[in-house]
Image (cartoon, rainbow, N blue to C red; front, top):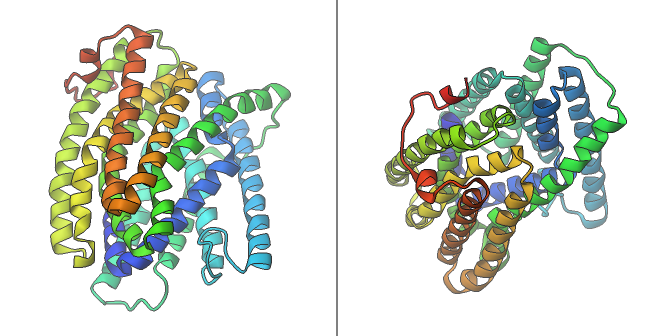
Length: 406
């Protein structure tokens, strides 16, 4: 995670705001299409592995079906748009990066799907090591470009696409070397279980994605791609706060299925509250260094955008494990309602504030919407578990936060 972040900062410095804005839009559109075409299948498969103890063969078969379906839909829509519109699906501009869009989307699918499998079968540490090695190679190449040891005479997105494809190829290769290659047919009940979960997950994920990145699309429409680049880099710093809660939630989900009450879950949540606070302070210090020493002056406003958004990101980080808890307890509707609340606030505030204040308006809308969504989840947990707000927000650090589940 840290290596990828450092490489991303160097990418922003090399690409400058306009090209970095373009890259951010391509990645966003790829994530949107992945979410839509995936139909929430990864979350449904993860829950099936945890609840029904699916064997590896059944899990990889379902992942394989999902991969083929998404790739074919992507290829078909790409062909239609290029043939009849002269534009590519992800950039929605000229087709110069068409091949690399295929590379990136293929890599994205492999990374997302096989990360789920590694975590579901308690091999998260192997996944993290593999991603770290590829991230190190990415960082080394970006350093070479940043210090002009190598000349870059192509669009920087080419590097992003190739790195993502390599990461995906490494994950699928190592996973099947460890677990073998086996295919187990899915029966009617398996498909029924997947689709019963995936519909709600898809709706929740789609609402979340649009809520969290509507500002990029709207800003590009009414401002410029360069301003998207400045705002996107500030968001990358802020999103560092979400890394630990997301990783913990992946690990936590299989452990929560047998828990009847949230008592032991609260110890994890309290520890994460301390960690999130410490990470938030660290992000402030680190970002000041990078904006001063690494990034060009074009990005200077991004530091203050970051400071404005940070409280909302902190509150949202505290709510991420709560969303994971709701998922294991069949309370997905609460996650969906929280996402819808965030979506409505983001869209309304962005439409009002961005034309008036530019990316400052986007940052302010971000702060309000993320804070409101997080508080909704926190109060929902209180209402559904009879625990106090004080217990949820308490700061208590436990060195091994998973000891409670042993």
